[in-house]
Image (cartoon, rainbow, N blue to C red):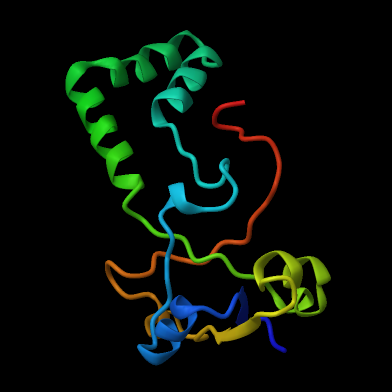
Length: 145
């Protein structure tokens, strides 16, 4: 299997059948992911941390974000973040992973769908649909830790 494939382990249920029949993929909102720490972006907390770690000039510049007009923009951005969906998948080594089969494919009773990712960006990235693909890198959250 090439690197331009994404695996999705699923249990067999009406949602799987519906996605196959209608050729669609579900992008879960961040608050529906099974890991409560995935995709939790707190702009206010990140800004506060940046200010606390900045030099005097940095504090002055970042302090501008505390003004009412900028604060309203931050609040609006925070509200919009939750409107984006996430499609979680795996790479080919996971195909033989007992953990993936047991956790995401209904204790080995489900299926593993293989999605081919187009190699040309214009075939894949469509305005207001898909923003990009990123590998997960686990570690401390540098924005808030």
